[in-house]
Picture 1 (tube, rainbow, N blue to C red):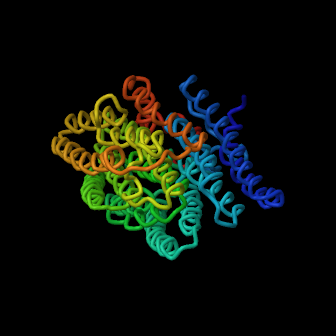
Picture 2 (spheres, one colour):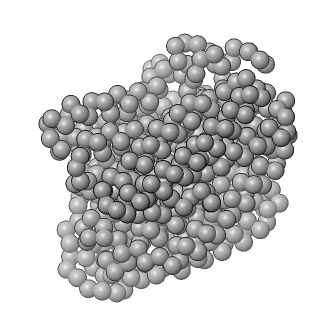
Picture 3 (tube, one colour):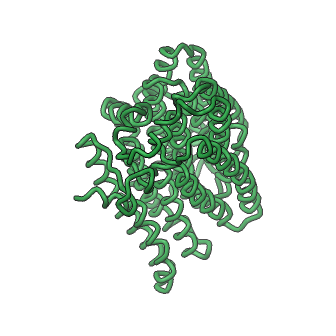
Length: 495
């Protein structure tokens, strides 16, 4: 099959979003089934792209209008993008199924359109080959996320959306100024050509532009201090959207940060920027874990936990080594699976029992045993218990940090795991050893998805080598800038 078909990853959700108003005439149920159908097709396309890239070892490069970059814009689907478009598509498919149960607030057609645009934006951020289109896709993602945060039409949702919008606007401004500085210094926006020219950029310009871009992306990546929107948005947004935020929207921001960081690795003063990112990541871990410890709402607690894990990924990506980047990618994969499961299961409790306050989880093991089991598996995994997936990515981060002479990261990972154990064991105790109640019939579709994700967590924990190999290839795609430049068919302008 022609590699140009990979452009359907962008075209399908975009075109499908415009057809939603036509489907609306058939009723809300038709809109929900349409959303499931589109995301299922997206999974098929993403699966084909993944198989093509990982079987051939070569990236798929789509050039708009047939023009070679940097004159034309391009999509670059290497090992990282091929892996994560599958995660984006599969998570979206699962959450489309969940939406059929969870979304009752009107207008459903607007929800479906924004849902598809959110999937489109994150996919585009991961697949684009130039930084201006990265900005465009980032804005599509952000605007969709603002609207979806406010979708439930409550005061809390409106306030959370406004916070997100204000911080997102600040972040976008930082990012755009950083891009403008790079364009002024190099005359190009193509990532491969930027890598070629990075060594000749003035040291001050390189440092300032990189710092601005990192702070700009810190909003989507949920890094301290620009993540104040996240807990409120996670709590107020519809439950399927919360899972999408954690599973892939934040990952798209982290990827964009890492890609640009390593594209400019030849620039003077680059090491100072990596240290800045390590500081931001460390502060994010500390603030996230300590905040999660004192939450009485389970969804909000998991949101802070997610923020802390993102900080850990940022630290790994900024270590400046191939093993560090691979470990960060491995943790991104594991975190996406675990948090998709936790937000799915906790959200299902919320719509079934009327909220996600910790009191609603008393006796959950007796009332909703499959859901309680799923939450337990996710909670134990996040703590880093052996035989569950997150254990292996935390070990890889520790090993990479020690090799890079950041031995204090070991203490950071272990301390974070101890704090996680405190609040997650408290939740597990609440579900299984307190309260009473009658058995509640659990939704088969949602239960099947939760069980699949729980078993996947356990499977990776028992057999991590395959997923570690995938993560290493994806990590090399980011770290090996020389190979990235060789893969992109530049016209040679300015080289």
